[in-house]
Amino acid sequence: MSEVLITKKINFVAGHRVHSQNLPKSLGPNKCRFLHGHEYMLELFITSDLDESGMVLDFTFFNYLNDFIQRFIDHRFILDINDPLFESITGITNNSLDWSKCLVYYTITETDGKLELISTDKEKSLFSKFNRHYEEFNNEHKQSFIIVDFVPTAENLCNWFVKIFDRMKTIGLIPAKIQLSKIRLYETQKAYVELIL
Ligand SMILES: [Zn+2]
Figure 1: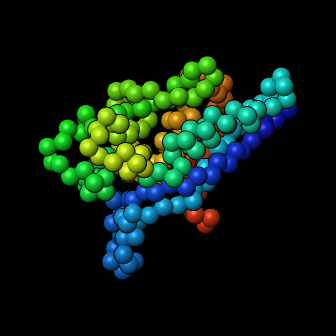
Figure 2 (figure 1 turned 120 degrees about the vertical axis):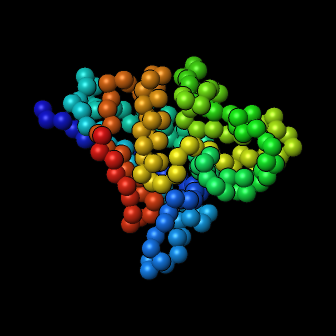
């Protein structure tokens, strides 16, 4: 039997700003540099032979990724730690502040079948958040941000979701043999980015 393709769609809303945008003046303002948001739709494609249960991958396995997105990304602002406006956007303006102590880097782990986050060193992290122990700042405000170390274009976000998916495979939440064949991220109904893997 030939290979079968399955797809899964995951919706979420999030804010971002593309501080790297630099269009010629003839095309008008660099709107993507403004703080704004999207109704994103992530679409995952997996191609494989059928397993002994007659499936490529039980769709239930996508619950882990959906859970991660809904708990940690949905309704958050995705901010590049290298954004020149990082301090003014976050409201933290103390120039003497030690960012390495202010931010905690996180990756995904699994405990008793439940998806959890653990703090880790920067190299292994999937994203970072403000340290909850910095009580001098407003926690509600800090919880609005998911901090990444790339410009959050749809292209880079696609790459990031591939890393998150791979991390879930590494820790056994998704069967190791499953390979993404394509990933697509819609920023609007008319504009999407696709990564062929
Ligand atoms: Zn945008």
